[in-house]
Image (cartoon, rainbow, N blue to C red):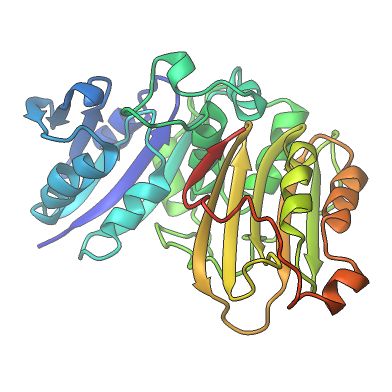
Length: 335
């Protein structure tokens, strides 16, 4: 027995999950309120019935592991899961990856009045009083961009302006869209064959998921930077300010000269940068960085190009001792 799950994400209040529930009478509706998570308290509703959970360790991963995952494993049939605003659906799908639970679709609600400002701003969740737990240093941009990027379909609260449309075309190019006033349930039947449906990338696939349009539109550009030589770690670090100026999203799989065997990944939005280690390279080492930006794409490309090792450094690479600010960046760095 296992559930077929429709995850509904979004940073603002909406009734999309309720609408999907009403449109599927035999389904269940689950929602969590994590606003008191830092105190170890989680409120969960299933089909309108409230359960108050007290967790010894108030964290998102504990909520998923100790409550949501076991709950879904015990339900048969479709379940509409309305995610708390601070949750990114990719993290939920990662928690479900080793279970029999099927992710039928991920829908994200985009507030057309606020999303672009949130996606390019520097507010942290803590600034908005929404931090999931002590130590949660994510930016609002990281959350809203992650929610939209991982979505199989998008629900817009109003008409999108041309700039927002250009961003979403490049961030989530395959996701069909509907206004919140339209038949949102029809989106579930409109998903393309390429929809992720919760599938987690191992980090070595193409970073241009869905083949977004590469030509600039309304001041929004995509930079796809590749190269076959390593980055100088300090110069790459120094280039981050350029990467984050006017950025909507940075995703990269990078090779730094000081860590020749390690494939590092990085992603950024709204001044928040996450860095991690994918493990050893699968195949030949190279750089791949994708930047969706409202800044000058030539400046972004030039900054990345200047961060590569020079011919002279490449010839001495086994002899040089590189200072490496990325050594201790295992999860996240706030800039």
